[in-house]
Length: 160
Ligand SMILES: COc1nc(N)nc2c1ncn2[C@H]1C[C@H](O)[C@@H](COP(=O)(O)OP(=O)(O)OP(=O)(O)O)O1
Figure (cartoon, rainbow, N blue to C red):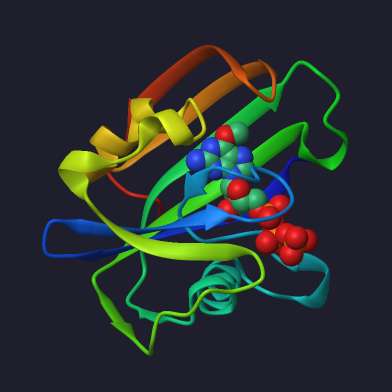
């Protein structure tokens, strides 16, 4: 069974809110906001996405839209992170004030100026597909935490 995670992107005119991960998996990299879904407690994926966004950025996201499911495999044994299923959402409607959390330092970036060199290597592959408004699944393999060895993106019509 893969580990189920979320990733949320908050958008405003021509910009996306990213967070610099301050601890844990992906430390030192810019990313969307998200984390593990508490399935054992009965939390749904969308509930997990809303909760993690608020915990990590201070924002309450409304009308989250699912844009992708990313399936990751690491050849190296990464413990619980070896097989990941990441549910990616976007929203342009949100409430609250942005805060720096223990886990993330938030910052708005122009979509034309995303800091891909300071992000997971897969991001440069699929962010443009997301920003083009497509829905998709992706199968991505890493040999270790730094080296992506294959990727395949498949557009879908919906996630029903
Ligand atoms: C491998 O490539 C990845 N690319 C991208 N863009 N994002 C990734 C990748 N692998 C994981 N992620 C995302 C998915 C989640 O949003 C976070 C990891 O979440 P974390 O392990 O920090 O989960 P939490 O529940 O917040 O962790 P704590 O137990 O520390 O609260 O990275």
